[in-house]
Amino acid sequence: MKDEDISVLNYHFSSFFTHCIKENHIKVASHHFSNKKIEGLTIVDSLGTTFSYEKENSKAKQNFTLCHELGHYILKHDGSYFMKSVDNQEKLVEREANIFSAVTLMPDIVLLSKLYYNCESFQNVQDSLEVSKQALYFRLLDLLRVFFTDKDTYIKQAIKDYMEGQNAPLLLLLHDIKDDIIGEFNKYKPCLLNQIKNKIGTLGFVTSQDIPELLDQKQWSKLQNNTSYLKIWLVYNKGKSIAYVWDKNKLSESEARKKAELQLLLM
Image (cartoon, rainbow, N blue to C red):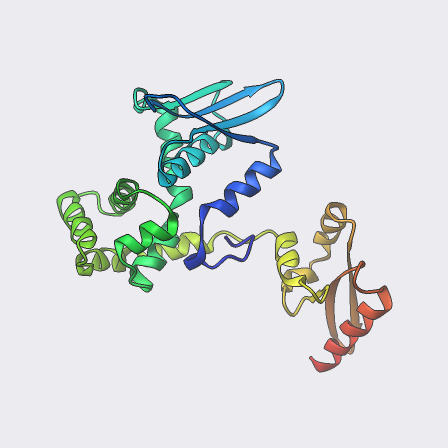
């Protein structure tokens, strides 16, 4: 989310999933077996990695399956063949992949934002994240159990009330843990290169006034080694300095410097 500058209220797993698929050259295909017992497959061979999902399943179940298969890959489970079926749910690697899938589809900060701050209904959250009723129920249950180890009965009732349109008990629980969830989310700092790409936009120019980390010249070589079209420099005047990055396909070196000097004068 932070790397792609996506609002937590607009989060959908597809952006992360698509990034992982492209980055790792993973193929995705569908399959169909008449009994629908095999919901997903991961195959790793000399041709690469392939994920497969049951095409006759609901969209919500397909989403869970795809994230489940991605979990096997990201978690580096040992093996070249994984099968998600109704008969092997209790295997450790399958349970780990299920947890990965649930968290990818429904991150803590997204649930907090939608339920606590935006007061969205259970159905609305389910629809916007494209998950099943069962998946959302158990995700909320697992999230709350982490913080409230001795309130299992109360948690289950609060979630059931929420499903029926009464959100007060659930909001009280979320109120007590919101600072922990936000604190954990804020620990992650987005990649500098992604920050630049998100902000440089159509103008082809961004400065350390927008991204203060640009003043750290130790980062420059890493940026320049990872992109051929971005250039970075710094201007200094009367005790003030400003670092700037420009897209060489949109601005010349002199044009970028003039823009930086103008911003420096206005500081």
